[in-house]
Amino acid sequence: MDAERIEARLTIAVDGSHHAGHSGFGVASESGALFYGAVREGEDAEFAALEHALACYPERPLLVRTDSHEAILRFVSRVPPKPSNANVEQIARILAALGLREGSAPVEFHHVRQSQQQDALHAVAHLLSFLGRTGRSLPEGDLTATAQMILGAPRPDDAAHAVVKDMLFPSI
Image (cartoon, rainbow, N blue to C red; front, side, top):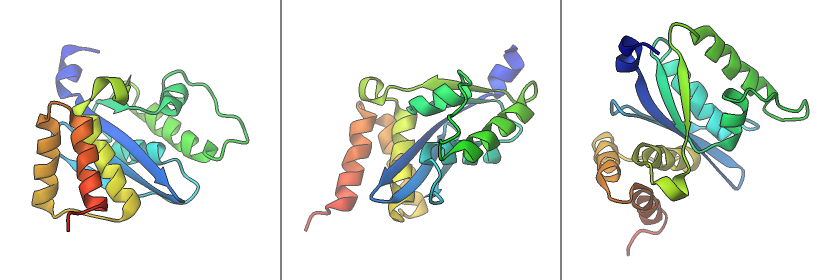
């Protein structure tokens, strides 16, 4: 990748969350943009986050941080899914979107091993996916401040989990 594209490349983190039949996605950008939402039934939450990021930044080269082994397998190694895979259509949509970007706005993936790396941007995406899954929200200013707190924490994943815990079990 040439120097101009590397300078224009935007780093984002994507994450998906699924629990008890509910799924949500989160996208955090190094530019400070934060996106989250619910995932349609039957779709992969991590893939939904990636689809959202590709739609938000169609002309921008991206470095995508994900903890999804499945995403790396499908979109980096290009291992095709089994026909019985429930996400075949979703995978095809993402592959098509990635194909349209080749040459003009390439996408590079970085596999985050969150339990070992404590990747700050991914920790923010993790919190956002929880918000998307549960339908909870934080006021705009509070969301930005919370994201900044996580980004600056010595152990950002632990900080994100503490926010989730406080939302689930507030002090009385």
